[in-house]
Amino acid sequence: MFHLNKILAFLLIISLAACVSTQTSFTTSNDEDEDIGLGGTGLIASTGSGIGGTGIVGEVTGFGSIFVNGIEIEYDNKTPFTVNGIAADYQQLVIGNVLEVLTTDAQPHTNARIINVRHEVIGDVEFVNPKTHSFTVQGQTITSIHKNNKLPAVGDRIAVSGFRISTTHIQATHTSPAGNMRDLLRTHMALPFSKQASRWIVQAQVNNKQLKVHFNNHEQLIPIPQKSVVPGKQSDIKIMHLLKSGATQVTLDRMINAAKLPRGQSTEKLLRQPNNMQRNRPMNIMNGSQNMQHRGVH
Image (cartoon, helix red, strand yellow):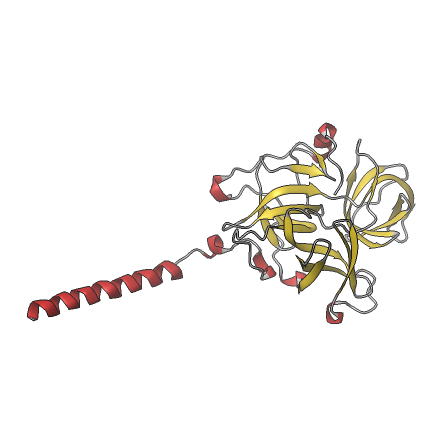
């Protein structure tokens, strides 16, 4: 009996040690490595259960890799890169670019599967109004979110990243010389990656308490809660989480508070990448545009 009690006591000690070890493995985990990709949005990333990827549409606010809608998105020089759906050599992304990114989240980090620079309008500057700090391209009035941006001159050929405020007004987040890019004018907010994504985190203008989107060639008006819209504010650009609810329909899951989201660093730095990915040394965006091949526009 004495030997039996010793054996039972020994087994009890082993069992307690195993419990302590198990608890420790959870409490000492690295918070950064456990961040499953969608950052301060409060959203849970896909675990590979077949619901598809996430489409992200928004302005680049910082680096480390790139921050869009508060989400840090990793990429390398093998990530497919396009400008308005046209394949381009890998290029430098700048703060203010509006991107469409298809991501995969079934791992500890949010990785880009596709990165597309999305311009709202490309063409020649037709008119400049210094008093309102605005200019006109293809009949569209362009105002800048950043008032310290230098105005272009009449005749300049430029590409404008930004958000459509109305049928004739675009609020620019970044402008750059267009080089030999073809003319472009987006007339609506189309959700990209319709066959590959099941949800989207989009930055877009809300008008009359509604978000107008095009999904699988169908227009849809999505009601936006009144409390999230500022009454009388002309520009009400919000970040919204949308879910696919049918072949041609999406629904609003939640509004995301942009003020609480991380924005990244103001300059690009070489940082740790998942799976030992090495950052590509980017080239100038206009040099890359010389080698484009047409793939169509999203």
